[in-house]
Length: 98
Image (cartoon, one colour):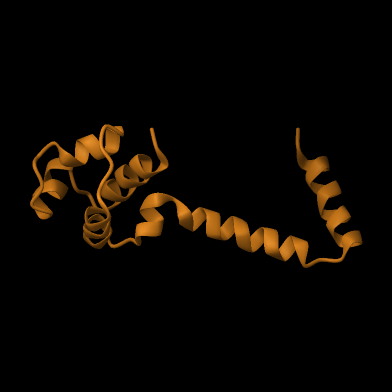
């Protein structure tokens, strides 16, 4: 299942919508949301925007880019450290991993 499909399902459930309720809210056929969540279909750009408005999230949230933005912030912070501090962090990560 795609990250979009998983995120759509997660945010739909957070709003307590059934697939049919969300589809009706957007004037879609009753199977449209189910097809998105199963990965059978992908939304057009306009449908992605409509879904994000209906669920009160950003298109990036639905596509999974929000997590990537956090990863990029972390990576940028790490790279801005002095090499000796980077090594300390990498050593700590190694020590914490099973």
